[in-house]
View 1 (spheres, rainbow, N blue to C red):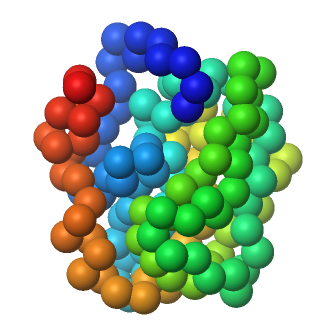
View 2: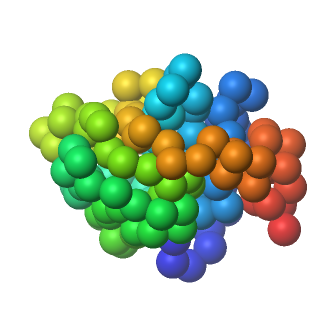
Length: 136
């Protein structure tokens, strides 16, 4: 995320998702998971002008870079919060990357994956643990 800047006054952090230390999130939807960047990440990036996402069928391990987000300030790698195969990509972000700034959790989701091992969720953070990470 480059140089640290103070986060905005009120970040939106949800209870029903898992957080990865590299500022991506995971929402479990039966046998697949939806992934995006956190409100903190989009706040730190500033106005997002371009998002590069992988192709359907690509496979990644937890911690791999799956794409990048470019803002008016910087370019930041997007890290896989859980291992798996890409089964859907939010193509809407190609033409409208600013959706992520407005709604990083719902409309601004990035990819849907078929997870290799849902036990990896045990290594992710809940909302309170993520808040602790941000305050360090």
